[in-house]
Length: 275
Image (cartoon, rainbow, N blue to C red; front, side):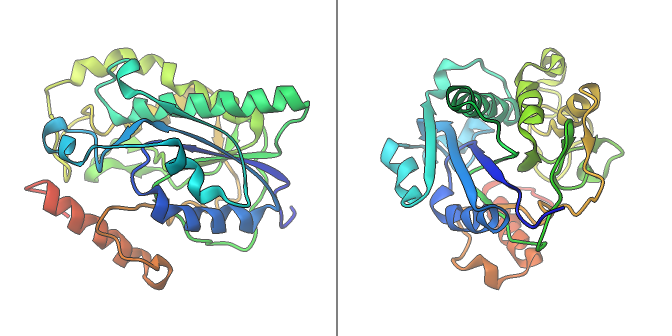
């Protein structure tokens, strides 16, 4: 085990949202573990504070420009990026597969750069661009083939349904190639079974509805024979999605306080939110 991870590709894949506020924390986190970092960015041409349910979210829609993406990368290696019109992709009915679609694009950008330049990244970090992630460990262990590091598995909304978080993944380059195929996971064909059964209850769902399909991610990892990194340091355990109400200087707050900011925002948007 070495302190530094070697050459790292960072794939920022997801809705743009609070990237300007999250960027500094992401840079500090990644560059703590590697002195050789290349960045890739895949996002939509528009962004909203949330996408689903549609009702209400459209009010927060705004355009995303090339300058919006590139502005924060001064002095860093932004190798490539792509802005995608969300109206040109299939209607997945769930945010999980929209993010997986962007993750596949980020992977293609990464693979193309490897092929053209005849090298392979030592590690690949895939994460959403709107995430606060503090440095939790001085050193972390390199992931091997079919091995991943993320936050721990959890049981969604107090049920016995195991689920996997998707804010952050670290793998080697080969395993990222495998991980990036999750947008074609066969469970996509089964999502329709749950449409309109339990439309959107942010605090609790009684069955695997379409708005919390992290159980599909765990199903995908198991079917691809991927396994959790053995040292289980969970460097992503404190990762939290940044919401518009978050204050500056998040490092001054505890993770519990930060997550309470998130709950406050959710309560303001979704009546009946239970947290």
